[in-house]
Image (tube, rainbow, N blue to C red; front, top):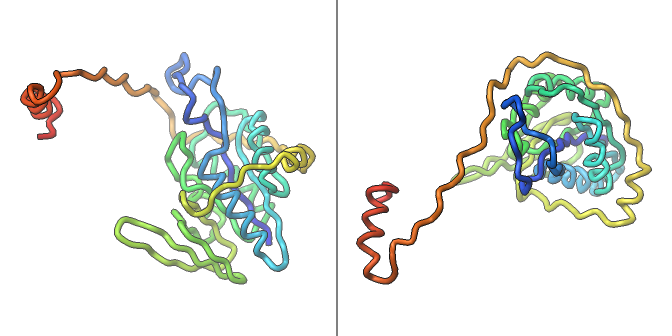
Length: 251
């Protein structure tokens, strides 16, 4: 069984980002990057499916990003994926359609039995790429998967939602997007990190596709106002209630 995992490089959530000079993108200076956390879950799920397959299998990492995203791709390989494809992207901005088109074209060549992706990327939080890829490849799509089981060519998944869950089934080939809690991503061991440096990673130029969406501006949220101490003990209660009512509007 061949499993392709879509992996994206994103800014570390601990990084303090700044808006670039043109006001339409993040300034890359000083930004630390990581594998999108949801995609790490996708990699782990693929590896567990491979381990449980009687006939074995292959896990291929597919990443669209700048050339230096090779660092994050190697991290995915260190989780014990077999090989990777880096679609080197030189475009300053690429929308969901352009991203999906490049990925779908590569996946057509790879012809995997199963494609796994994180439900969203934590930077843009759009969640549109995987559904578009499934549509372009004309294959079943199951999103927000919280439990997954594969028996032969039949994929059975649970989708959790507020107040209950949904159980759905699809035949391979299919694409699924995974949710937190499905599996716990492994921490690569030192021998696997060393092996990852020699694993095959094919780098290809990504096709330039004019975006259908234009970013007009980007702004960081305003800084939070500092806290206020209204007093101590029971004597402060009336003043606190007044502020909660008049200023916060919660009473």
